[in-house]
Image (tube, one colour):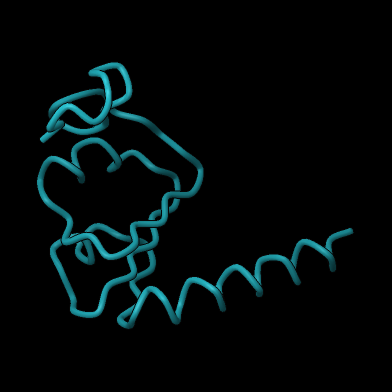
Length: 86
């Protein structure tokens, strides 16, 4: 649901458009049909949630845990990999 936050042109999913990012990281969302419809064409989908949710069924990588613990570690590791790549 939009609930007036953003315009239709910025909405993704059944209520808006479908996008195809190289990497989509779903943080703390259950994976509603609407969300998955808009993001299912992502090249790589990572799902992070405290409990396994429907989005885990379509994600390439699923991490069970607290997003406030996992995301900072993930960011740190990605920065380290970026530095190594030069």
